[in-house]
Image (cartoon, rainbow, N blue to C red):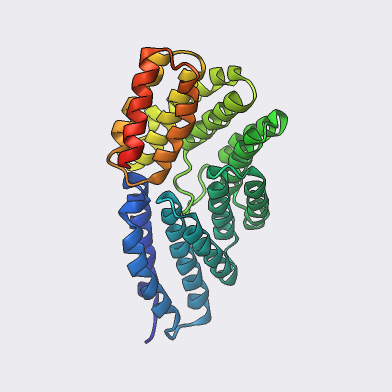
Length: 307
């Protein structure tokens, strides 16, 4: 079989469309479709083509595994996810695409962060920063710096967390006007605000509740900016906002935001929304004497059981 530019373009377009669906509806909505697509990518790689096309195809198939790993992670299957991320790294290196290497490292690190392994996450983010610098991609550097800040927040290292958090917006500003590949196009000003709020929320949980004062306006800004193309991000960010209101003792607002986040999450096939409710439960449980707290805990338990 002879493989041409149009074949690779077609595969790349399908991956971009499935990535958009993942953002809207969660990894569970497109995980099986990606499984079907894998053999097609492998078959293309066995075809006849020029060396430049072969390198480009390696990068596109790498991104297929990158997205497959992300959807497996989002569906609560970390072992399967890691296998795909590792394969994506091999193919991205073969293609010579350092920006894609950086993105895979970011996503692998995010999986470690989600499972509360910040040291392992920092190792991946560090490798990702090296690749992003080789690629000359400030947007990828900003994504990685913001997530390094999150990892340091989980470790309770306020100085490092805030240093990285101050660096990320500068790198993001340097990227404005650049052509953005689909794997990093999600990281807009909304996501920058969400990451600032996320890091501050983790510092509020781990170090000092006063960080919630900085978290709440950043998270609110992000939530207001998310449209129908980023439903999962909106729900996840709303849960963090509910955590901050609970930490500050405003159980009325925490319940209002938390219940609204769960209403959105019912339409999303994502295990991460269910998992994100755990820190909300922990924050609310400290004030279990409040009737709103008991009601919210019951609703969270119902949602997680149904999910």
